[in-house]
Length: 350
Image 1 (cartoon, rainbow, N blue to C red):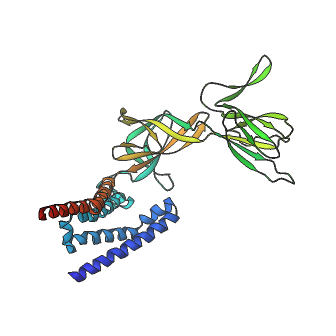
Image 2: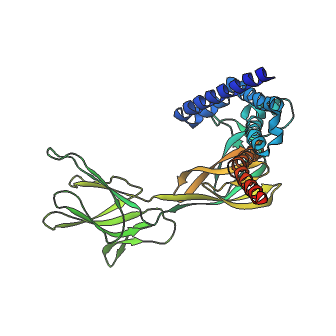
Image 3: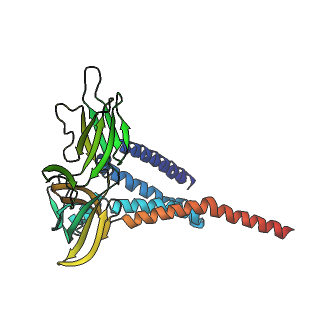
């Protein structure tokens, strides 16, 4: 038995070393390639081997059953591996092939405002689709921005001065230095810039409604104090005239983008939610994550959501919980109990 223990012990250490190497490799090849790599057949065999070695530890190391902390530390990785294997793409495909379950592993939903879809597009080409057990209706899509945008200024190159770029906070009332005594002052920020004519005079206005034409008004001053009023636009970056020394662009920095959606089953609303970055919607065994968006017209958007199966997820969570509890138990609770026992023993002797 001692010989078998040594073999399993060294095999586990070897497997852990290989796992570390694979993790380092996966960190440098990008998320998409890493997912393919870790779900490949050789790696699937590797996960099964690792799982079997950990399970064998219960037989060859019976002391684990008498020490709850070590038992939890050992059980945690086993649960994580079981969850990872059960929720893998290969496992989903095998269950579908043998008729055990017909569930999507991962895909994307693309939906326009006011429309409902019940199909997810399948990677990597996103040409095939999978019918979901529910429909998602996009009621509204909105983008939230940080209060202060940024003004990007790029100087025109000359024979004596190369191109230079400034990225400045578009904070009203602020003045920033450029080159050779030149400055730029932020005068006004517009959500929806529009030119109007009042009393025969051209007037810029910030008109109500969706922010379809964000802009910032600035004053450029040269070293002699001469002023030039300019406008920088988000939708028309780098707008410049032949006589201009600088190209201006206004950027609003995105804080979040949110899909206000309904989940429908047989035409009836089952759930309402706002799906945003880092706040997914969960329904019927799927997590829906806000992934990206496309602007399809003035003030009109297409929301793109990632759909991910929850198969195996609860095993993974239980595994990490067991591992953390076991570590805390072993490093703190066991020592605390031992310390209390020694104190009681010392008091009894006195």
